[in-house]
Image 1: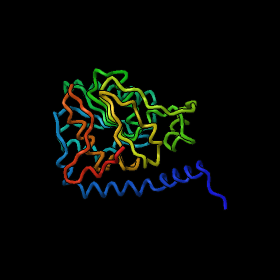
Image 2: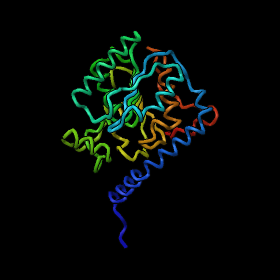
Image 3: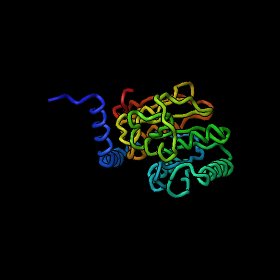
Length: 257
């Protein structure tokens, strides 16, 4: 009997991760319910506006949990109110820019963006074009470094590239840092995008943080919510890299890498 090749084994592993995405998202939801008392101990910082952007084909319904969570921590939090995220259509791009400017003007302060998947890509593009309006960007499972697929790039990246009609090249490199503080949350157990496409070059104001979550469960995972709270609590102008919590066994929620 022949032994499956490395590419074949990799494809099977990718397929298994993709097939188990919904079930693993439910596990994150259960962990959130069980761990909520501990999450109430999450860091809190200066109240400032937060815009939460949904992933591809998702709407504000998908970010309801994280928006309620941030609102409970004292942050004025809004969704994008643009229906389902079908990609960078002109009305969507203009709508997000208008939302960002309006929110910053309303609160008289730069905005933090928390973006899931494609929403994180939008957030990074906004930071590149309008850094004066942004305090920081936190992306959750966002394949912003997807200059090329890994074999097939992960189903989410492949579909998004097909939608955008992007030409694939043959390497995946960490994306350059943004002009504002940026945190990329990624998971090696992501069954939708290749986790390597979620990495940026690390520096004084840029970091990558690993979690155990599935792609669909990012907005429900206790570790992800703790990270978001910790990042938003960073004082303006005094951003520091994330330190894994050590209290109450919370460190176990975070992989070593």
